[in-house]
Image (cartoon, rainbow, N blue to C red):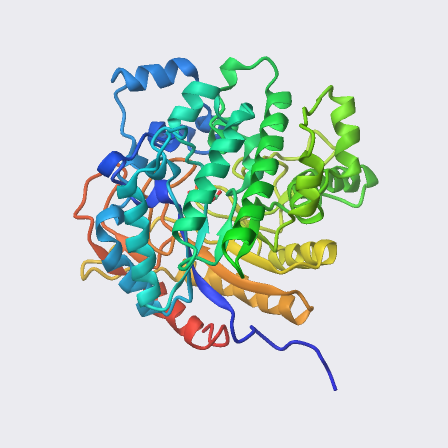
Length: 486
Ligand code: BG6
C-alpha cells in the first residue's frame, strides 16, 4: 500500500497574515507608546525599490519627534483595524479562515519597552481581538515582534544592539503568554529575523549612525534576538501546555545563474547565509560555515555564559517563513542586474516580476519546501506569500483581480506537490488578506488583499471594506481544502 500523501491534510491551517503596525492604526490610543514603525514616512515613488528607504538616523528621529518633518506616517493609521476588528474578522470568517496571523504591537503592552508595569488597555485590546477570532472558530497565530520595537528601547539602548533588550523582550513575552495562555497556542518569536542584515532599524530598532561597524553590530544584535527567541520558546512551553513556537525567516531560495561552478558556489553561500537563521533556531547552535565567515570578517560575537545551552535546549517546534521571490546569482559582473528583488542578484530570464519588481516563482516554493524539510525534518508553515499589485475599482465597485488569483493558485498547486513529495506543511497564511500599509514603501496602493480598503497613498478615502473577486475564490479554496483552485 502506498503511504504517499495525496493532498492537504484535514487539519491544514488556511488563513491570512498581518502585522499590527501595518494594520491597526490607533498609534497613540489608550496608552500605546511609539514604535520604530511609527517613525517611517511614505516612501516617494522614485525610491520605492530601494531598501535604503528602510534606514533611519538619530538626527531624523529627533526631527520627527520635534515635528520638523513634513510627511505622512501611514503606519500610524494602518487601516484602522483597532476600531474595525469585528467587521474585518467577520469577513475572514466568511472566507472560512482556520487561522489568522497577527502581531501584538509591543508598545501597546509596554509603551517604552522598559516600563515597570504593562498597559492594561493594550492587554485588553488583544483579549478582545482573540475572543472575536475564537468566537468565529479562528485560531490566532501571534508574532511577538514584527518590525515594531518600542521606540523607547531604540532611544535608550539603540535597540537590539544592547543585551539589555533581551530581558525586556522576555518580560514582555512572559506577560502576554500568561495573559493569553488559554487563547493562543501558536506563536512566532520574530518576524523575518534575517532582515536585520538588510535594515538593522527595521529588524532591530538599531540606528547605524551610532555604531562603528554595521556588520559586527548586526550580528551581535542577531545573537541577542536568538537568545531572546530561545528564552521565549522556553517560557511558552512552561506557561502554555501544548503551545507551538516557530521561528520566521524571509526565505529567498538562491539559484546559480549558470552551471559555472563559481555561480553554483555563490548560490550555495547565499543559501547558507539565509538558512543560518533557521539553522540556529532548529538545531540550537551556530553552524560551522558561519564561524569561518565571522573569523574572516573580524566579527566577534559576545556570548554570555549559558547562551549556548539555552539555544541548544530550546529549539523551535516548527519553521515558518515568508515566500515572495527567488534570487539568482552570477559570478559574471556583466550579467544584467535585477532591480526589484529585495537583495539584488541578476535578472532571471525565466521569471516574470510583479509591478514592484519582485520575481514570481511558484516552482521555487516547492523547491524551498523540499530543501527546508530535507534539512530539518520539522513541520513547516508558510506564513506569508502573495502578490502586491495595483487594483482597479470598476464603476459598479467590483474588482476583478484575476492576476492575484492566478498568482495564488500557482503557489498553492506547488504546495500540494511538495506535500506529495512528503513535506510536512502545517498551514498557509497569505499576506495581507485585507489591504494594508506596505512594509517596504508604506504605500496603500501596493495591495495584497481579498478585501479592498478604500484608502489611498495620501490617506484619503472612506476606509470602507469591499470584496474583490479573489474573496470568493479563496473561500472555495478553503472550503475544498485546496482541491478547488479553478
Ligand atoms: C514581509 C513582511 O517582508 O513582506 C511584511 O513581513 C510585508 O511585513 C510583506 O508587508 C510584503 O512586503 P511589502 O513591502 O510589499 O509590504
